[in-house]
Image (tube, rainbow, N blue to C red; front, side, top):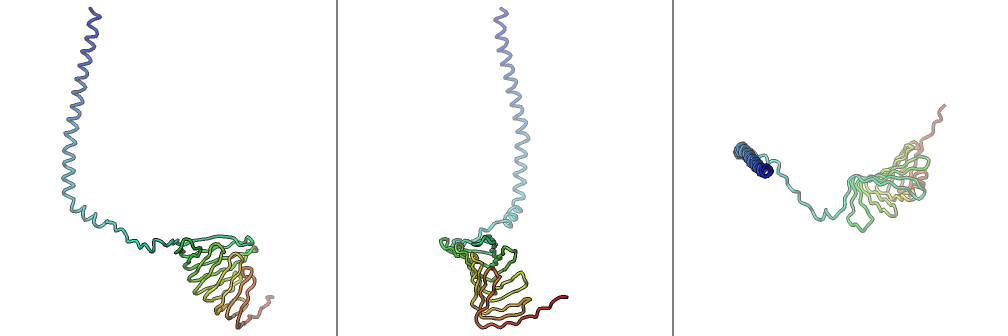
Length: 219
C-alpha cells in the first residue's frame, strides 16, 4: 500500500511546485510591468516636450552631400606624390610635387603642380630642379618643368630659366630659353644650357656672358 501511495504523492508535490512557480513568474511580470510602462510613458512625454529643440539641433548638423563633377571624377589626382627611383647607373633620385593628375589612364604622361627633382651622385653631391608646372613620363623617366624653373647645386650655384627637359634615367638636362646664374664662380647669362653627369658638367649655349669672381687664396 505504501508503495502505491508514493508515486501519487510525488505527482501531487510536482503539481504544487509548478503552480507555485507559475504564480511567482506572473507576480514578477506584473511588478515589472508596473515600473516599465510608466517609465516608457514618461520618456515619451519628455521626448514630445523637447522635440522642437531637437529639430533645431538636427537642422544645424544636417549634412549636405557635395555635388560631384563627373569630368573631375574621371581624372586621377594625387596630393603630394613622391616617387623615388634610380637611374641607369644605380644613382638615386626623388621626384615630388604638390599634386599630380592623369587625365588619360592609358597615357603615361602625368601633370605635376610645383614639381621638384633631386638627383644625387655616388659621391654624395646633389642637384635640384624645381618649377611651377611639369610633366613626367614614367617609362622613359623624362621630366619637363615650366615656369620659374630653378636649378640648384650643393656647391652654392643657382640658375634660373623658364623651361627645362630633364632625363632622370641618364642624369642629364637641357634648356633652350634664356638662363641666368650666379654662385661662387661669378655670374652668367646665356641663351640656353646643357647639363651632364648630374650637374658635374654644365655647358651654356648661344650668346653667353660670363663674369668670373677672382679666387682669393686663404693664408
